[in-house]
Figure (cartoon, rainbow, N blue to C red):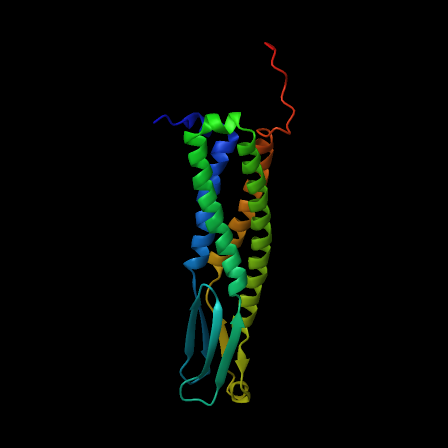
Length: 207
């Protein structure tokens, strides 16, 4: 079986490796995250609630030994799932097109529909990265805001109960990587466009 590894000396081949790696990084940092929020009332026991992907955060509880009732009912799963789904699709497509580059490079170069399809699907995934990263950035802002300010009963205010949250650095990284993925996919479009029939190739001097 002949494999054409020379494609990885071309920009389109090198970029696919970056696409694969950063797609995994984007959804892995999101799905592996576990957040914590703690409700603490001075001189009384505190309450800690953990949450994770897909970030449908719901709880209703009274802080131990107090009449303080804290509650939260927010759902950011659509934004998170959109982002993770984009990452998974990008990873799978990167694997598929790398196989095409390696095993079917002659078909890629001789059949004008193959590079055109590659270009169109890459445009689509670039748009998905931009829209899903923006949606997830908005969702994360909502998570930070709501977990820092749950619904408190009046007794909580009388007891001076406060809320603290854990670090969101992993999710911040996921958003940065998401927009980086958009940049990587969008910047690769020029190299893919050059492979399509619409790019004016120089005439063959031997013709």
